[in-house]
Length: 317
Image (cartoon, rainbow, N blue to C red; front, side):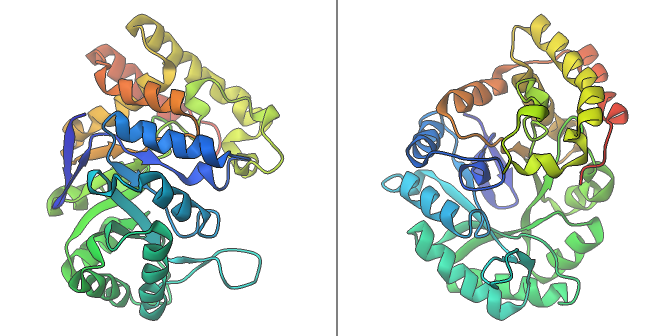
């Protein structure tokens, strides 16, 4: 698989998002999830993405077990900034330096490693100066516990402020055919500073694959709370899926592959390295997703796909 440079970190052109193996999208099977991670590694995927908040630490343990014995072939990305240990029954945003340092040690233990390749600030807490939070991340780099730092869901102004404290390798944001906010919110700053964009939910949380029926989602599936998956919105948004499917049929590809190929191609068009990290719990979808890097879209395909975001019904959250 081709490689992409995110700041000073070289990663595979496509990564693997592991959140759904532990949280948000209903039940998952441990053994099947481990097989999924290992199949991704077999296919040349090296960027494996997790967070301490996914499954209250469960996901980091799973990922750590899955990459055991192959650690030197992997760039492990995890996140800090959402505290699940408050006992309040929900995750809260927390960015104070003491928490960041303690959380990093706990993540290293769960992952079974001595360093985190890419450590993101998961969300920005308004009540804590960003410089203090980034300073704590920089301290972890100085200690050798972290190789590179990242930010998640930030503005260009926040990225510039953070980068002034310590170089930022990547910004992780939701980015797909139906969510293009980063293009107006942070891409200009990322281009200016040489920061990469890691695109989570590049398949529209599964909707753009054409395989998700919002009416049949499990009771504990978090997509039930999202406006775009509400019955009326989902019905309207099927028109987007139909257009992706039309282009996919002409290209001899799956709709998911077309959606991923579009995201991967945005790097050249935006002037910013873009690495999609589609999530899945099954090896067969990893195989399909990885093959998307071989899908070439025509200028006409890109033009048609570019127009879809303006037709989305429902807010992102």
